[in-house]
Image 1: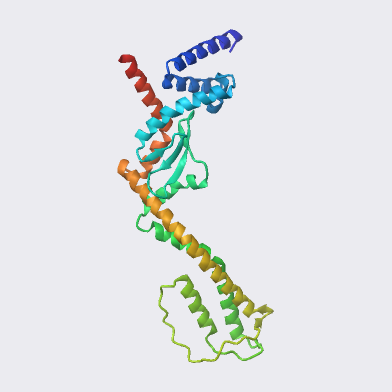
Image 2: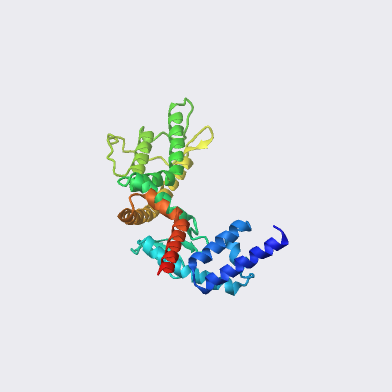
Length: 296
């Protein structure tokens, strides 16, 4: 643009924006912000500073004014959202409700602030895919994650026991207490990975005490690996028990959120589409209100 064209554009823009502010026309204020961002190739959050000569107090006043009406509209548009006056958005009004995000007033969006908030929609999609087994699937994955180290150590221990039993070389300094060491290990792992399962193994007939002598195979201390396995199992038990409860609470909250969404929309995908189109839908609502007021 030439100097004259640029000055004429700025004069026209600032006059129109000042009139929109005087009339308290949210639609024309947003239109001015959107047009300036497009014409001047600015990020939309940079426009208020440009318009208001980077005066922080004036920018804050404009932000708070626009936020008030955006909050009022959103409370009606998505009825299960609890929107605080400061722009925080909560999912529902039940106990353990989660914060969904915070309003981005100039962009007319809800912005997630952390990974927990960003995970809400994917969790809802996963729940919608299989509501009856959502929690079971998560618990099983948690079990695998918690017991991975113990499982690896058990596999190592079982291999050592089998190799040691089949080796012609002496693998211990004293005679074994019984011939069922490997079988006992299998039963132990089966029990901690699936504590509700019933064992079908025959009772041991050899009542001799477990040897305490050091055993090794190819330089590997089998008793040390067994101790590591037991330690890993106990740590996994504690971690699993602690995280399982949190997982159950989170799944219950997800169920509440899912039910709230389906009480208003036909599916989770429709709800996500509503969120995606918030800027467009709010602008259209403001435009309609502006037209209705002009005809009144």
